[in-house]
Image (cartoon, rainbow, N blue to C red):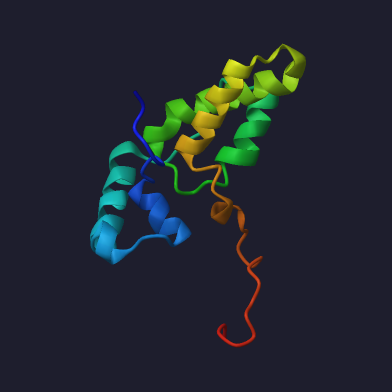
Length: 131
């Protein structure tokens, strides 16, 4: 039986999207240091040379801008891009089970959170609270 509720969000993603709460998740400085250690241990996420066509376009569109991903997410990122490429090449032959897999990879990589979609400078300024 599957566990109830939403899956826990990775600590580094909580820092990126601003949902880190000290009372729930501990000191932000300690979490940031752990995230930096993970990046140092796994390295930056690099695009594999084997991606071609629609899978390469998916990498450039979805994975490259996701600066919170490190090398430990490489298998999930590659699998997502390959599935997305397969979907773009033959959408009618793409079964519902693969749609579920693709959605699971997107969730695992943090691509489904709307707060991650804002580009730098796109945020609307509040006339009273923002300087």
